[in-house]
Image 1 (cartoon, rainbow, N blue to C red):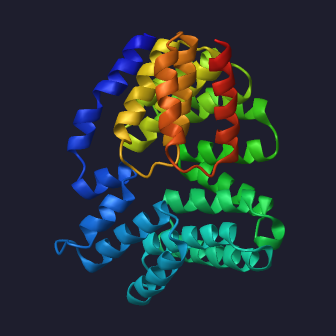
Image 2 (cartoon, helix red, strand yellow):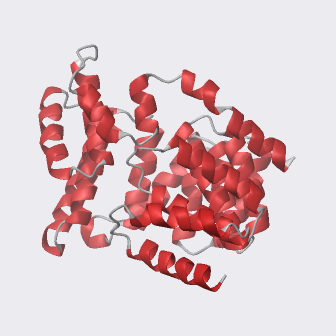
Length: 324
């Protein structure tokens, strides 16, 4: 059963990819620089479609100042477009993370205001609602965070939209450190929505946090098989590889999943690509394939890295290889 789940997920790639436009597929593959080049030549998109795609590429590359300028221009032309408002809000949150403590709060509040406008422009957009709830939960109060408002919105969403409402309720429960309640809720809702990929993925994540890697591995396989969004599916492949590397959960299947992930994001701007290489190196070490592990480690080291945690894990792995 486990093998069938993973095989079905891997086999679905060609079918799913054929349903996407070339622009959407580049976005799914995090090939933001390549997409920027193509958008500079295109005349087939509408003005609004072009601006939305340009904003998405800038967000993916964290070109926050350029995105800010483009967002301002786009909103002058389309002030009530919910997607433009949402993307503009996300960029404000990026600016908040990148700025000093003196200006971070103002960027966060500006992002919150844009999210509220987006929700007013399209009250049925669940992506906007989820983003707003996430902001209220994560942001400090001084920057607009409000756990009570998050709970109110999550409750309203759960009453009207399922299983999406369950997903935000899980976020609320986890914000209150109620892991067991979140697990129980996920299990209840999966009886009603047994093939909902995001719910399966959330349940797998909860099981992983609960130190239950074996069952988490099974649920990630189910989530990957059920996913119809390519980038979502690849995220589950990464998690399968992570559990195989760190908790020895079926290294062969974990290796297969990571190879698929690396093939999908080859020559991309994917932020987790080096981590996937590291996890695959760890699996190779478990399988006593030291040469393959060393080759991947060198590939990681050949690229500039600014992730301290990745560098630390890399040093540990190199030490293990020397002692192998």
